[in-house]
Image (cartoon, rainbow, N blue to C red; front, side):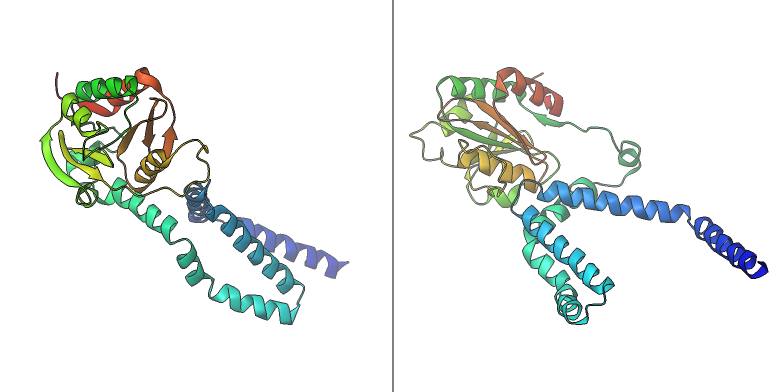
Length: 276
């Protein structure tokens, strides 16, 4: 009985030490890992990468199972596969990793860490754009079913995309936008980039999204807009050539057929109207 009592007491002490050894840093560690996995899921959601991720995770769980069952041959083979898994993940998920790093760099690393910016973390900083000209141009192009793709820069620099087209560097106006996207214009094929209150370039080539969640009836114009919104923090306006419907891509999400009222609300919330 004495031995049993001492054994139980020893086990109780071990359990007590186990619970006492859990620190605040351990809780923070778990929360950070959970947040990281959530961000990874949000990046690969709706793409073919989610299927690859599920397959790799299943192989890892199977390896843990055979290792626990002490199945030496299968465990050693899978162990070799898992050993080079980091390199394989970088190769397979290179686009998602690049998007994640761009997201971090855009939101945090490009910020100038002055006292005012530190105090204003979490607050929205609006860029200056000729909102009325954009609204009027999109309204007219929607009525005439003129296809358009307009990228509006915020904090991210878009010079690399502007260099794929023709540099204009002209004041933003609805007449100029409508002239560019007129179907017989040599500049209508591609995107217009607006930055620092000016039309920086036209006929620009944008990255194309590989998301599989887009509706089948949406064409390359919408897919390019979503691809641009996935790469940086810009807002992309799409006017459908087939239906005249207006859509907006932002933060890796596509808002389809938001209408003129939705466009007006989005622009007024995100930008300062320089015509006021």
